[in-house]
Image 1 (cartoon, rainbow, N blue to C red):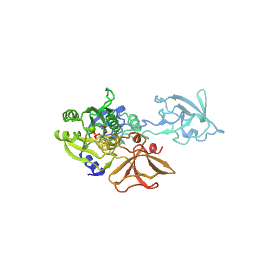
Image 2 (image 1 turned 135 degrees about the vertical axis):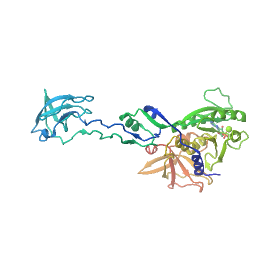
Image 3 (image 1 turned 180 degrees about the horizontal axis):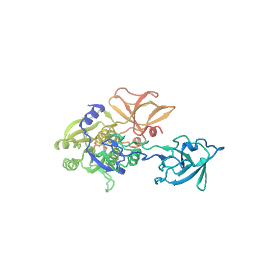
Image 4 (image 1 turned 45 degrees about the horizontal axis):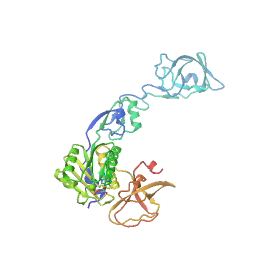
Length: 408
Ligand code: AMP
Ligand code: MG
């Protein structure tokens, strides 16, 4: 049986990065840039005032103070969004608002709080520094500058930055499509009537949500029954997606036909089992360029396997370079008993106390107990070797959410 690391390596070796497309700026949130972004303009486009106040000549105002105020004639008002019409000459000032262009002749701003207006005369009570409260043309961004590098994930600040230089259409990698098939005679979907012999198909919904969280596009193929013909027909419908996920039917049970049907569909199987807990049955194959995952049916095993194998694959396909969750070291809060054998992913809570990470299990680790996954913000990653771990031991922990959230 191969290890988690070996399985990840095989999978990532088969995944290629998606093609490129152009999307409107508001649609670009969460996408990955596929080209560097150069600014076509300066920001700000002219010298601007950073304050509401008066545009003045430093030479005229350098001796101003409360005791020795200076009076200047107001020659015009420049609200934001208006270009100045006049040049500020000796003994003159222009009233100016934040963000308005600096008029010719002026070389400093005195903020309105240090002035008093009387008709068309302003009294200045404080001397500015030369250039004070002036934002210089191109100070934030200069024309031709690379403002964002390719392969970064676009968050709100990047959207704002691109808007500030007029980028309305953004080059990004395409989002992979992911067909999701749930298998099992015992399953019913939420919108169908169900008899007492059925359980609800939670994997279909959980996996679709996990796919969406990576930025990829889920395609729900519904439920396939545990017979080869129905499985084959349902799987065929997923062959045109970029990826396919099939949950259940990959173990050794009498009705586990997924592997057989994949082989009949000419899928080249790369491996079938991974030495991990939860989630030992995991089949991976390739058909043309399509990676196909046979995920374990147990709800937690399915989601943990997605986390370790499918998520990195989808992020790689989406053009991301940071594809693995961060792993930190934390101190075990209480004893955790385990058996030697397989690498274990323990649903856990990480918190920060006195500047150190602490971690504890979220309780019952049964592979159908979704509640203990809901409570988790991390997985303890425990090696196959060794048994019970004592309180105070250091363990590797994979963070499932941002460190700040995890520490909350
Ligand atoms: P299997 O690998 O098909 O034998 O499934 C293992 C266990 O997971 C069984 O108890 C199934 O009922 C359960 N299971 C399989 N698929 C799903 C699903 N889509 N939603 C919820 N439970 C499932
Ligand atoms: Mg089954």
